[in-house]
Image (cartoon, rainbow over all chains, first blue to last red):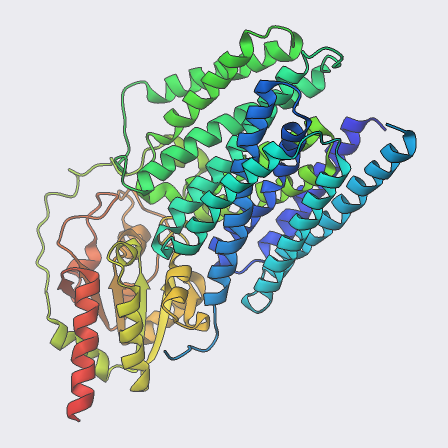
Length: 96
Length: 472
């Protein structure tokens, strides 16, 4: 099986799995869902790391470094704000 | 490099990728309910850490300098926003993060393209080139589109739709040119002059796509941009041959797609209608003829009515977020529940500026989440409800959506606030809402208007209740 075919299979399976899993997410949590999936898709940082780390041309290193910065802003910010939001969803109120 | 090293490196990247993929899926599974949601976030964090560690160990990295610099800049941007940004501003932050994700995809794609021309590099295959073009188009248009959405949400740009003649035709023309350029690049990857053209067309399309979109449509558009950002990451996975990227991007794309479908359904509109329909410019004149009287009331009277009620349902909208009234709403909630009044919140899927926005704001104000009820679940309760309190919501409670075929919102599922015994609506003035549609709820016999800033009005009602409690 060629690479591209197996990749298409992976994509289709992952998309269907995603649809099934995410359909079950309570509407209460749709905002944190968005910030979490955003943080997860910032996994593209590994592609940026490769380009920035290989340092092959000035152009690719520059683009790679900016991409690392953009993706890691999403990773750090995304996970942190998701946790901050999820902490607020309590069943019983906490008196100040 | 000796073969044993290479085998070891590929083992590291493969095994860490598998672990990360599993953890990402578990993260979304655990996010389904508030009780396990934080575990889900933790799983996501661990998955990310494992994948990054694998990348740092497994790739042929020559220098860490640029990686560290990039990471530091990213941390300095991401962390302060996550820590200090107010919950009202979460839609803006989300739009920015879509922009960042898409920017990364577009830049990585661009870098890959130009690296094909380095000595010793293999020329790209046609299939790879086609996917790379899709990645760059999606990444660029999502980048500028999300920046535009950010500008509108942050009030840097007018949030009303910007329209001009031939708009849809021009947009279509630009998108088609971008696709044709991509097609030629796929056939002739060496036509380097075309690549900047592709970038330019896609970034321009992103700007023009969001221009005609109004504030009320932001929840759908943000969800759609989320989906595009995910897809561009997935395409990057195809180009690189990284299954982990394909999976993570597909999950993000699926999530954005589901959310945009939910948002569209909640407005009874199609994608095409949201993107090209320019809501909010519709027939302001058709309804201007009728003049009906409204009854207004005072916070004192409102407090007395609510005190005597046994059930109160609050319907929050974007106006509550704008007025930052959620903490005063919490005071009101405390006052009423301490008197044994049953208080619930009716949440319309498109209330606010992004999916789930109202829930986050009310949770921030420490209102227990089991009091926040979805539209379909709470609607049957309105006929038995004593008071429906509308705070900064408008179109989502307009009964015209149920019966007035000429209304632009006809067919949109609404919260049946009008069926409550008494309706109270907090509003700044009688100006029609965002969509420019007159709301017949306000002129109904059972409706009392509370004019003023939501934060002040709710605060006054809560104060009245507190004073009444003291004097008893």
